[in-house]
Amino acid sequence: MVVIVHNFLVLISLSFFATATLADPVGISTADSHAPLGVMGDHVHKPGEWMASYRYMRMEMRGNRDGKDDLSPQQVLAQGFMVTPLQMSTEMHMFGMMFAATQHVTLMTMLPYVERSMDHINGLGRRFATETSGLGDLKVSGLIQWINKPETRVHATVGFSVPTGAIDRRDRIPTPMGVRMVQLPYPMQIGSGTLDFLSGLTYNGHRGLWSWGAQASSVYRLEDENSQGYSLGNEGLLTAWGARRFNQNLSASLRMAAKKWGNIDGADPLLNPKMVPTADPKRRGGERFDIGVGVNLLGTTGAVAGQRLAIEWLQSIEEDLQGPQLKSDGMLTLGWQYAWN
Image 1 (cartoon, rainbow, N blue to C red):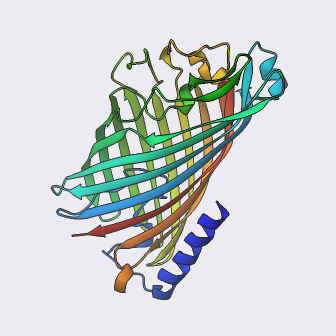
Image 2: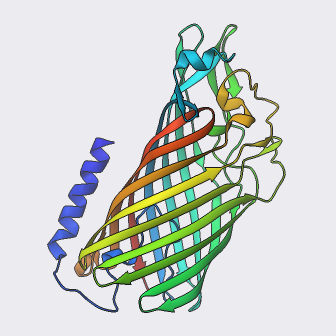
């Protein structure tokens, strides 16, 4: 992780600071014309314009929580579970494409490649890890422009998440009878397994060197159950941000985000909810409040014209979990975007 961040910052320095200018242009793209990197579907494009993007996201979860109370591994095992998770890492490589089909409609598609690992300990003190990886669910959306004024823009997002990610991944775990392949619990699966409806409303405003925005978005499961007999809980997200532009090429942002998600409906018959909390469908809901800081950089001349590099760190401030569940330890997002006609 340190090497990734170091190389990213070196690339920023070489590619962008050399082109920085103190100009305060009007009517052209600037570093803060996009929201912080962690906000998806934050902007529309001009007719005929394309944009390719790549995001690297890493989320760490460490320690268990029930409600707002932290629990030790011993306290989780004392609730009757044979195994408890200790920590979980998720790495996501998100590939995206946008195309403005008309003045009012921008099409967007995103496909992630996901890698997950989780560390556990059982009642005998034995530690072990499970891993999984693969393509996630494909998301296809339309961004519909509603208001487009010099200092105010509003658009709606309507789309679908197509269940291309696996929900039947297995891995080797130790048991009293030896090591065997078992179905991985819900958080370790790659996709939802259901067709999901995506919706959102995004507001962007700016004046002078300052910009701001807000977005409300949701994920609604359109199917009662997937091929394994369950459906993930619905999700809702509210986020708001402000940014300060230092010149055409560089801006910094501060963002707040509140997320809520429900428990799983149904259950995978291959999972024993008494084995580990992550296999219990009634212990998956919760809500979280995060604060993020970010930097956006825009290339305007030469080989980097039209290219963006950005970084954002999102830190969990408060979590209320229907647990025991692993609690968030923060998320890093690095990204590149390139727009052309």
